[in-house]
Image (tube, rainbow, N blue to C red; front, top):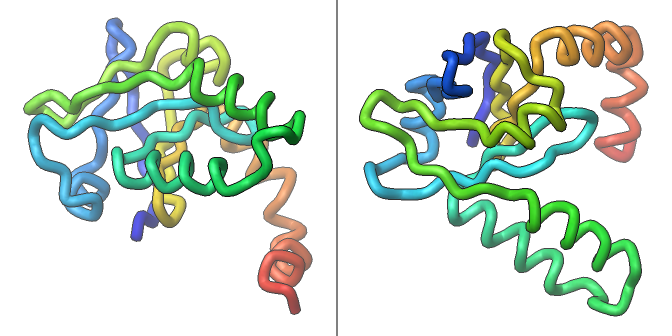
Length: 145
């Protein structure tokens, strides 16, 4: 289970260090791959091979003839990049994904259950400012209560 919020700074090669707590939570071993893909609300999603495969299986279980399933699959998987963590726990963000998420230098990594979200720090702050005041309503809707 991935939880928590961590501030990081990208280096000049668009590399970011994954927090030790996340590496331990996913039981990352050298040589395993991470998948960096377009996320929701202006973020990027970072998935282990297992969580990426579960997402693909979930999509496969839906109707392949549904236009929104085909469109999402193309937009998501075609722009996803496989990356290996370096021995220092870093990975590189593809320039096109950095541009998509408007990532420049300061980023925020969020643990969100089975994946990590990577946000430009200013976009994350805007998202928080917009939604924190409505936390109770959001929780009620999400939890069905």
